[in-house]
Length: 549
Image 1 (cartoon, rainbow, N blue to C red):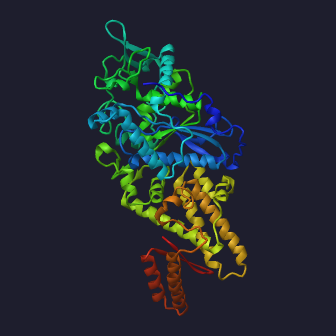
Image 2: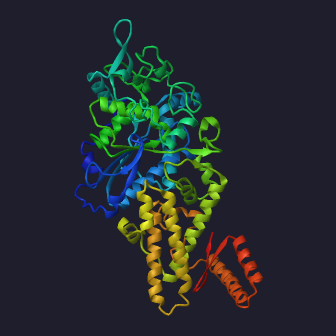
Image 3: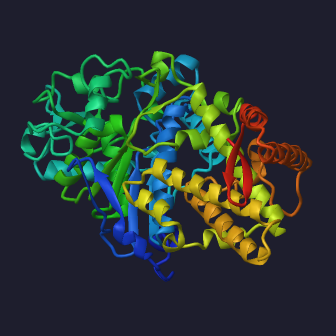
């Protein structure tokens, strides 16, 4: 099987143009992010002024995506969007692992060609990303397209004395190549295995919940790679850089190398592809929390042992849990994306997946989806009412053109605090409450033009904040998909909204008359009935306002 090669002018044809002016917001000075290696939140400074390089471990395309997979994609999509809103040029690389033992074994069991199975499920992942509003990567390389890069990297590791080739009785290479952990004194620095200090709580939770993706020993989530249990290893900690094929491996799943016929170990592909597209050192390496060890520990070691700098910062998104346990197909708790989307709008699913900070465990439940739907109702209700009051919506260009420096300070502070999405969402709903109050004043205020200007300013801020989280209902993919009915653009009022407005206004007027007559029991009865129907009433000096819960 041949190796595909990317164009030599990749940096000018695909990467963000160096000719495009960079306007990094002043807000970027306050950005602080967690680093797995240091176990600390620290000030972020890019390696290159105005630019950020991010590599995120993507999917092993063995079967359909489930919610646990997509949570990481949404989490790092939000991180990426915040960098973009801060004004940085972002090169975002997310790989596809399209060959490994699980793909080969499942394809053989199903009577499929392994590459056909991989491509089929790669397309399913792509569809899930697109449906949930995840931005397309700058580049999305496949492992099978970078065999020459991996072979070159392994050769560098061997030349530097940090790997060894297993030979047969005749001294011929078998195809098995291992990283020599004992030769690399820095091994364990990412996950602090050589230190006695207590790790941070997020890491401790992950350790308590079970083994990592390819940890040795009894792993209830994934089987052990047979190559890493070989008696040919010099040290139990050594891991496969390249491995000889199994007898059951098809001929087109084998590549010829100077160290024998075989295929790559899992870890080497990410080192090769991150270096290929991001060069000697880059800003952030991301992935799921369960990849810290051994995948990322091994990746860091082999990259540096080859003579290249590793990522300056490592960021890990926590798991999606179901009843407290990590979501996993092998445990029967995996919820496929298509099945979840069959019962919930894509906007609601994305909101639920991104509703907490990326480092927090996300408990998936019906209640989480109910709360996400309620959030959508509140958001779309305000956007539609404001659009009707103003006679139209701000354009998408105006929304996306808002700089981080022009967003509400509480939203910026939350996002700069290690991408604290919960705090950012609270800022959005604070603005929506203020906007609903302004809308209620339009009919009563003599200076209605001034109030309209305030409404427009609030509406623009709300949509820009939502857009930073990938949730502006009037953006793609939500507009085309009709997210949960879709928010109106404000040029016309939907019949449903007009009817709701009339009914609630009648109730509020009745409540106001009851309070005026000091019939507080009736007033409370009206309020409670509206609350039971999902309507929140807020009383102010200018009268009562309503919004959906």
